[in-house]
Image 1 (cartoon, rainbow, N blue to C red):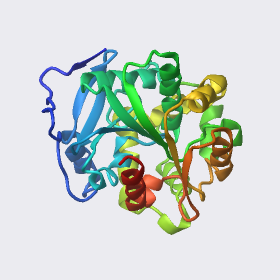
Image 2 (cartoon, rainbow, N blue to C red):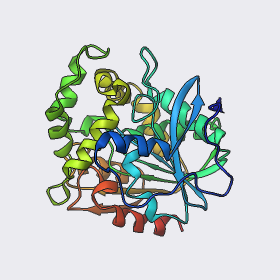
Image 3 (cartoon, rainbow, N blue to C red):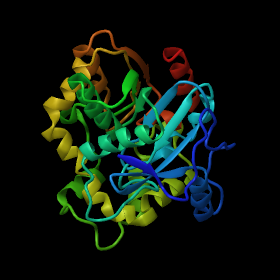
Image 4 (cartoon, one colour):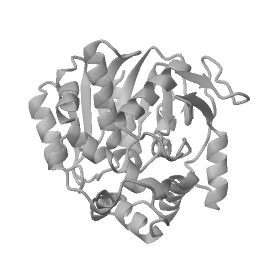
Amino acid sequence: MADSQRGGPRRKTGASSFSYGPWLPLRPVNNSIEIWRRRGQYVIVGGRRVFVWEMGDGPPLVAIHGFPGSSYDWAKLAPLLLRRRFIAFDLFGYGLSDKSWPAGYSLLDQADLVEGVLKELRVERCDLLAHDMGDSVASELLARANEGGLTFEIGRVVLLNGSVFIELAQLTSGQKLFLKLPARPLPVPPPVRLFRRQLKATFSESHRPDDNELAMAESLLAWGGGHRLLPVTIRYIEERRLRYVRWTSGLLDWRGPMTVIWGDRDPVAVPSIADRLLQLRPGTAAVRWGDVGHWPQLEVPHRVASELRRVLA
């Protein structure tokens, strides 16, 4: 159950919580983090703080980010969808949300977070947009909807690149390394060059991120010691295997409309994952791009926005 943080900003019904112009970061990055924080608000879910931001008016579109990102992953996309109430938040352990240890970082906890935030924002029906690990969180929400236990109604689901069939995923060397480590915080932060190299390699050659984008992503990950939690948060991959049947059934058995938007140059969530989903779920709409990697919303935000406007019309 979520309650507004005492003394924190309140959202005015029918109005955006904040507005902004060009995509951050601004220099220096530390100032950018503070500017970004001021443009959102905190709500309390299960006794833990969750950073939430939103903009625009209209039917709600709720965006669930992936690993090792944050709600900032949607900052390029949201301004292009002003006829939607775009709602994004940082999952536990990510971005500016709670990163306390020990605490649960299960994807079941993350699904509870989504329900708690939407209850606080009084959202009873929305469309879902998910990416990467967020696809698995969405799968749990769909499983709950199939069981009749979800606290809000889902209209359409739009999935961006994610390893929903984990046996087909091509994990990076960094992911494999963190999975081999004990599931507890690192005594010292991992090298910056490792994070940047691994992240940059998941973008397509045609749409590489610049140094400012990488610096902002790194700073949000490190905020509150989140970079030391990587051996803990990476366990979503093991959980994806453990709950394979439930989450695959959640996707395949859900009767609502679904769209897949996929970058086929993704070296991790490879094209065969999208192929299998489309094969097992006939009637799923699909948009495939041969020049886009793992991050469609960052690499080609205008394309993604165009497709969202079309399918969510």
